[in-house]
Image (cartoon, rainbow, N blue to C red; front, side):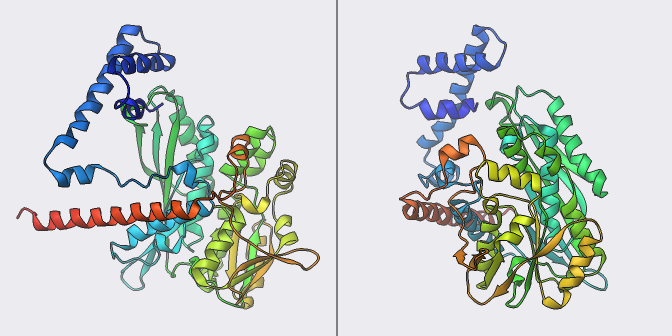
Length: 457
């Protein structure tokens, strides 16, 4: 519970004494303290919030502008941010817009909608391409830190691998709320280190803090794990997909999303299917056989499932993608596919953690052999053409356009209640979000101008 947020939301329309008593009661629900101390804590939070609000009385308009975030009047949940669908993709493109406004140079930045970014570093002899990526732990794995740590680490390494880079290091940023047991820190780190040891990629740095410091009570764990990779070759970003290419995919058993689906729907045996490092083994096989330089694009089937990835690739490149539905389903691990079918969850709308490769026909067989030789199943699932859209071909030859849902396929009861239909006012929501992004860019530019014009010698 965010007690500072609780106060900020109520301080303008609630009697202060009432607010203090209600907050103190909430605090006692989490903390084993007496009433007097809970009231002191509640009053302290109220006093601090009141102090920060005094900035609104200041004559410093610039400072007030910096401190006040732009209001989109659209919440994260309503926009579907983090739910890997159309709303989430729209917001991420706005983030990419802010990044692009800096005009800093990189080989791959968020505008490409890839999960990893790449910079070219001059070196003696040939240039080196450095890839960085970061992923957040699945929110529903807060109570299962080992699994959360395992899957988020595997996810960030995947993001490095699909850029054609060889992972060389891992870093961890771990936040546990005030009432969380310290053992969660160790369990999460052990999950990270299990992947680290299996793949011989060292965990080299990190940070450990409380969620919100004193202002968040409870035991929620949130974290991110990042990784760094290097390559002598340019990145295999999505933008490299070319008409005539072959689309290959490895078998996927899922990661954090499938684990969450299994845990919260009672398919506990499926958790074991997810505990593997097949994705990185396949990527390493491609790297070790010197095939990276000839691959046009690599991606992991994660954000919004194949629907989301196909849409992003087609949108970024303008090419068409033609997929064989039956071939795709054959490359979802049998236990996982059975669970998804039983729960009526679209396998194309969730993260299966497969490796998808877009390659010129002349190296397709070499890629299949290299990956198969390390024990990972792989097959052709489609081709790249000039149609300009992603399509799905059924057994009877009929075609349907692959479009991302507003949210990824619902895989828990609460997600089914929230639904995945596009809100009627989605276009208005997008306009509001766009306006907030534009305001953020203008604020950034004003602050940069201020710093440059007032720099001390």
